[in-house]
Length: 326
Image 1 (cartoon, helix red, strand yellow):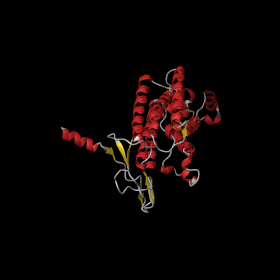
Image 2 (cartoon, helix red, strand yellow):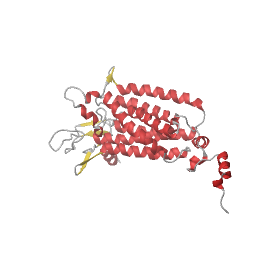
Image 3 (cartoon, helix red, strand yellow):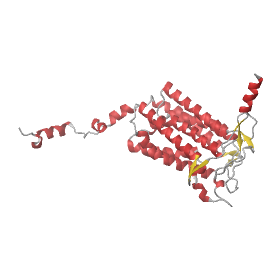
Image 4 (cartoon, rainbow, N blue to C red):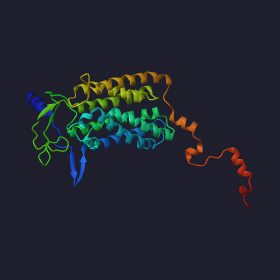
């Protein structure tokens, strides 16, 4: 038994990092970070579509909304990252053009959600869909997409915490390019001797996000939440975890009063989400999307047939053109 436990401890002693985050198909680079972001978006759209249809929506609505929300979200996420971590791109010895290299990592969730919501609002407005109802359908898929995106940080060897001796400590390797230049993102680890063993804070957030997804799906089914309350619960749950995880991270960040800026943002957004969750309760039961469409949309519009009212039909019947030759 002792030998088994010792063997288990040896296996769990540390978590190895990938030796690289980029592979090449000829001249084409395949970046793990970008692939994880794409996979997360696909999962969010797929799950959101299923939930939207279950709530009475029409299949295809989520994909149409995503055409607006995804580009806006990517731009917003990058803008937030560049603004809050501007020291990485601007200043002596920095190249501002690297701020455009989104494939190297760096998406701020607050900017992604904020500007993504603007894109979703535009898409919903064009289709006559209430944004809070759509947000409720999308919420679980969004937080799972965030979890998948955190795997990209694993491949990039970034967003980790301080040194640790815990069994799940993450090994950090020195990566170098073919020219011998040290590069944590584009390089390859040729020596798997760790230069540091750290808290895998990206993993903590990944697991926390999956827990939030389970929580909001359960709450939605049990209490039939609506009017944006599922989305508010997602935001509150996510920010609660991000608050303590952010305090553990050691990567470079903008500080306010010696504390990382995202700690303050997490606290403020959490309070706002909780307030909305409580206030929106007064709006009553979950929206009936199918009923609202039936009320607001003429039958012919739903079927694609031309809509003709009774008066027009009578006029057409009595017109000479409507009389068939015997």
